[in-house]
Amino acid sequence: MDIAERTQALALKIRKQKATIETEEATKNAFVMPFISTVLGYDVFNPAEVIPEFTADVGLKKGEKIDYAVSHDEKIQLLIEVKKINDPLRIEHASQLFRYFAVTNARIAILTNGEVYQFYTDLDAPNRMDAKPFLVLDFSALDETLLPELAKLSKESFNLDSVISAAGELKYIGQLKRVLAAQFKEPEDDWVRFLTTRVYEGSFTQRVREQFVPLVTKAARQFLNEQVNDRLKNALGGPDSYVSVSKDAVEAEPVPEEETPVETGGEVITTEEEHEGYRIVRAIVCSEVPVSRVAARDTKTYFGVVLDDNNRKPIARLWLNRSKKYLGVFDENKVETRIPIADVQDIYQHAEILRRTVARYLVRSTQVDVVEEITVPVGPMLTG
Image 1: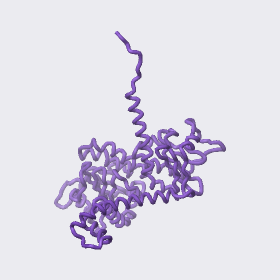
Image 2: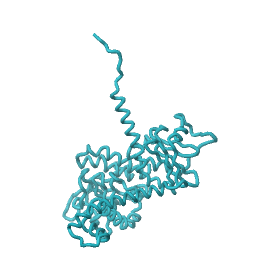
Image 3: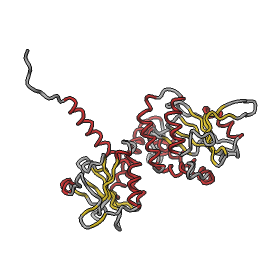
């Protein structure tokens, strides 16, 4: 699996098991060790790569331990301090990271509660850990734009220089995004004043503030919704941009259960681009189901991705072997809409649509199971 599939698989594990984890030690075993081993690719059972309870004397602090130190090229590169799942991460929790950062070769320190990972380096002063993280990875809401940077810390693609050179930009972009998200959700007075004084000519009094707080909040939400809708319209607008296929048309070309890789007219050849598209779709929907339930159905005209190897549960169709590439997605009636994409990586932009498609199949399966469970065959009544 690639880095996207590995992170999505861990995100699914966290979502399912989070409620049962009650201690810091359980957090380490259930989530942090899989992060180190599965996502980053280090051998947690090899002390030459991963050192638990890493100890170094720091000034007057003797024998103080940090939860994990990760070594690459025989040098300590990553320091990891773990808190219990659901515990908020505060800089006060990172005192040991601060001390160890100064006495080891590590340039990256990680503070985590198993779900949120805060990555620190020394941008502000050499060999002194910054007070603010340059990257925050939240497994409850994965930002897939951060995964290429995360991959640079993995064993297979370790590139510390590249991480450090990008850290400054990542730090401020991440902070700006979090500030904007907070203002859109619950605007502060300065933000309300800033926007109000650009549309209202009177004095910014308390009464005006109270009037405009809900207006700013409502306008922000509508703006975001309109941006999303406009993006969809641009993707789906015009007869040359998309093709909508009716439910009857989808069902008129079923692939039989005993489907072979040969369609009328010759052999089906799966291209590397189709393989990559398939891996991306699996990485996206593995937040909903295990990847083992996601299957491929290649044909001469498109590459199909289905749930449970069942052609009646289409997740996506990849129309890639053509001059204009499309991602085929399905609504609740199994109506396919083909969204134009410039590159196979553009599939990530439509992750939520694919996840909703899988979620609908899971809901339907649950409903069927419940009906079958409560339906009891009624036979002739026996009388004694």
